[in-house]
Length: 135
Image 1 (tube, rainbow, N blue to C red):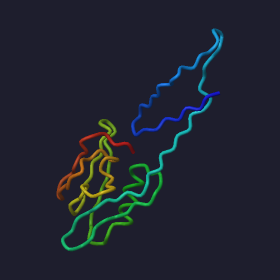
Image 2 (image 1 turned 180 degrees about the vertical axis):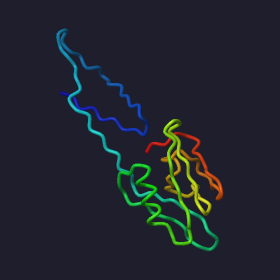
Image 3 (image 1 turned 45 degrees about the horizontal axis):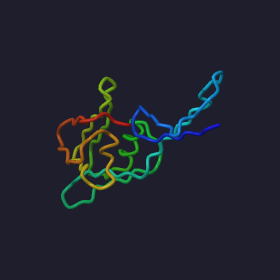
């Protein structure tokens, strides 16, 4: 019996097995189980505001997008009056808007997880991720 472990951050996983597994002519190969785990390490969302530290540390866990939005809304400072994180099920991209700038350029940002670039996104508009999200 062989155990093959695959790791990745996309919906497609593959593995090359070397040396190849040789089986008898009458043998059958089957998948006995598929176990998945997606635990997100502590990530940081920075919402900028002049002379204030607007970093929000998101606890380690497994989040659906609406859960992530809910956690951020619970942890955000009071001066942030609006924060919204939504998905577009047709494009698999995220849309984010906030009453303040969102700084995805900081270390350990959730930018790539949500499909955004590591830049500062402005307030007053709905920003759509450039890539598909992995959440």
